[in-house]
Amino acid sequence: MPELPDVEGFRRVLAAHTGEPITAVDVLDAGVLRGVTARALGDALRGRRFAEPRRHGKWLIAPAGGPVLLLHFGMTGSLTWHDPAEPRHRHDRVVWRLPDGELRYRDMRKLQGVHLDDAEQMLADLGPDALEVSRRDLAELLSHRRGRLKSALTDQTVIAGLGNFLADEICWHARVNPLRTASDLDAAELTALHRALRRVLRDSVEARRVPPRRDWLTGVRDDPGAACPRCGTPLCSRRVSGRRTVWCPVCQPS
Image (tube, rainbow, N blue to C red; front, side, top):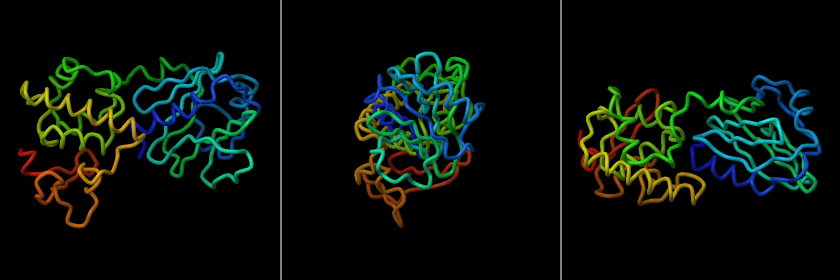
């Protein structure tokens, strides 16, 4: 599912085509439009040019010389560049045609979608972007959270951009149990968590996904009888806030 590193990759795809005129907008499935009709989307963007896009958490914000396009990718979305001669995929929902190719918003499950709205208003309830969180910020953000650490890390109103895989990976790298109460972490654990957050995000942004390395939790978590890449102990798994959560009971004691 797209998390911060994936959306940063989509931002770079769009950034490579800023300044090119939008010749047409093809809405192939209006089921992904949020608060805007297919006609209004086309009328607003046709003939305009995307300016430098930015990302906040899992949101991609694309100014277009007045209108602001906001994309959220839910669990299965993506934004990719294609030659116009390439056949469209059955899950392509919206296509922005440019002179030399097409930007295609693809999403199988259609849980989120495409907005044309005031970015500040849309993003007002989000926490700070995870890439910009300092160690002091992290301590403050978690200090009043009485729920589990995993729930706090994946709550977009606390920190924007972290999803299921990133949160588990960060906790594993920090050797902190994701079931701990967020506000109970001591100074050393907060420092370890922040260092892990920076490292995991840096490597994941470079890979444009949470990399499924065999020496990372993500690379083994779905193996039959999955074991910790660090110590070989069988991994534990349970659902937290509706999400499957994986950890090592030895490296991340409760």
